[in-house]
Length: 136
Length: 119
Image 1 (cartoon, one colour):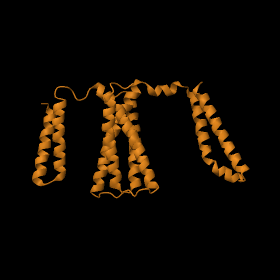
Image 2 (cartoon, helix red, strand yellow; image 1 turned 45 degrees about the horizontal axis):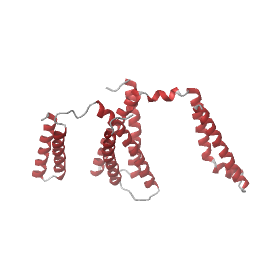
Image 3 (cartoon, chains in turn green, brown; image 1 turned 180 degrees about the vertical axis):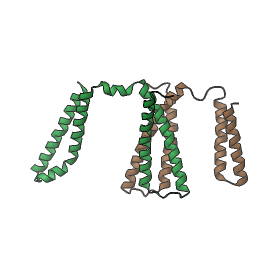
Image 4 (spheres, chains in turn cyan, brown; image 1 turned 90 degrees about the vertical axis):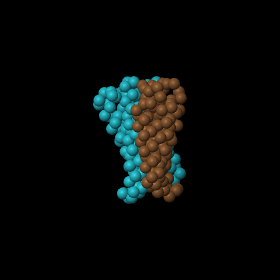
């Protein structure tokens, strides 16, 4: 079976669960507004599944295979290596700044800084090597 | 003896002497680490190269796996901080993250290099 057909079956099943859940709330004596607010997360799930299935139908399966040849694997491996090194140096810098009391941050700020530094760093390095078309 | 091993040993012994004379614990630790790594590299990589194509290719999945584990660790720490399960300080969080960074890299490098090749 093709990939987009599987995804279509999946989002129809999710929509059925959505309708049944709302019907069960109304049959148990809830109002229409209560059912709408209780099943709100299903909106997002169904919308994302519909988007993915339409995207897969338009692009075809070869679009996904394009990202997994030898060259992109080599590039992403090297990008992750440099990203690990950058994260390590960044954490060392934060330890130094914290132990000499040069900046005052809270725990959630530190965690958010490290999280986004790692994500954006690895994506940027991958994009850089992809534009250069090869490593070294 | 290779030139980089010599440089390791000389800088390590210099830091060790400086730490003992000036009574600096940080310099003593740095000197001991550099001296030991110089001796180890001289024993193990005396006549073979330290990095070649195969080890570079094998170490890539280890780095990727470590980054994934770090993302999960940061996520779990965020949840712990959000729901106030443990009262964390900044230095505790940073030490947890750096220990996970180094230990996980060592373990996964050993694991992935033990296999002869990745598919």
